[in-house]
Image (tube, helix red, strand yellow):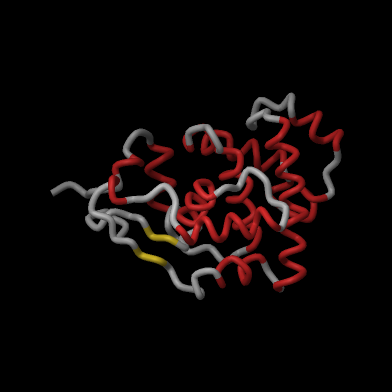
Length: 184
C-alpha cells in the first residue's frame, strides 16, 4: 500500500517537502517562530504555495528572519521592498513585518523568549486533533482566537485567528496531520 499524506500537500513537490519536514513539528526556536509569523502574515489572502516559493526571497529581504535587524528597518526599506519581486510586494504587509518584529521583541523582553509566551497558551503541550479527513480540520479554533486577540492587543498586524491557526499548525502547537498520514 502506498504511503498516505494529508490531502492538502499532494499538489506539488514543495508542498510535500514542507509537509514531511516542517509542518506540525514543534518549534521552540524564536528566530524560526518569527520566520513563520512573517510568512503566515504574508500569506493572508494568498495560497501557501505562493509563499513557499518566495521563502528564500523573504529570507534575503528580511535579514534571515532576525527580528532585531528587521525591527530596525526603515520606511526607506519598505519603499525598496515594494519593488522586490522575490516577496509579496504589499506595502501594508511589508510594513507589518517590521512592526511585528518590534512587537515580537517586546514579548521577548517581557517573557524571556517568544517561545515562552507562545507555548504557555497550550501549557507547553502539542494539541493533537487526529482528524480523519481534511473536512475535520478547522480553519480557526477558540485558542487561535485567544492568541490572535492577545497578539493584536500587543500590536501585531496581519495576524488574525485564521492566520494564527495556520501558524499554530506550522509550528507544531497543533498536530492536524490526518490519522493515516505517513508522518504520524
